[in-house]
Amino acid sequence: MSDILCLYYSRTGRTAATVSQIARALNAELAEITDGVDRRGWRGYLLAGKEAMRRATHPLQPYAAEKPLGEYKMVILGTPVWAGRCCSPIRGLLKRRGLELERVAYVLTRSSAHRYEEIFEQMDQYTAQKHLAAVSLRPGSVGYEFWRDRFVEDVRRCMEK
Image (cartoon, rainbow, N blue to C red; front, side):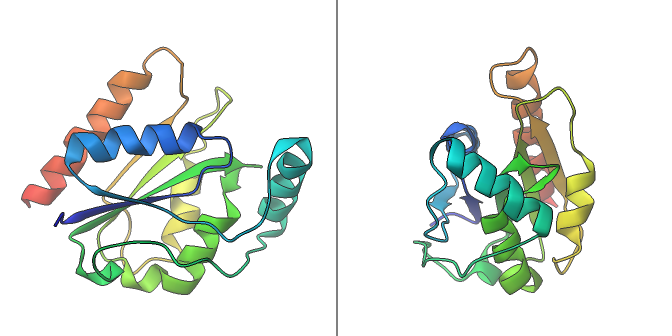
């Protein structure tokens, strides 16, 4: 059983691929969350942006994790950036269960050059403690592997403390 849980939402698969790489590097448990809303294609893209701007959330579907959230030494949340915010399923998790997250880290995936680091503070509003590590990644960009690997090392250092 791992002491690290990587929870993520991915509309297109890019966040899933990124968080999966991180989970493998950390020997962490990996779980996908969803709220059951169909966000495929252009229509889903527009719906996702609208939800993010309105900060709307939907009830989450159950996800498979070996332990309750509060029993992990670290929970890593992976979210795509939607309209300059975290995605609505991750926001829904944070609104409903964020206070259970004492040791948390964030992975943002984005398609633009803007790093959106202000999202980290937005997410911290819902958690028991501020994040211990965070990274904003643009899959396929120059430096992606460097920043992903640096994040993995940051998490390892946090786990040693």
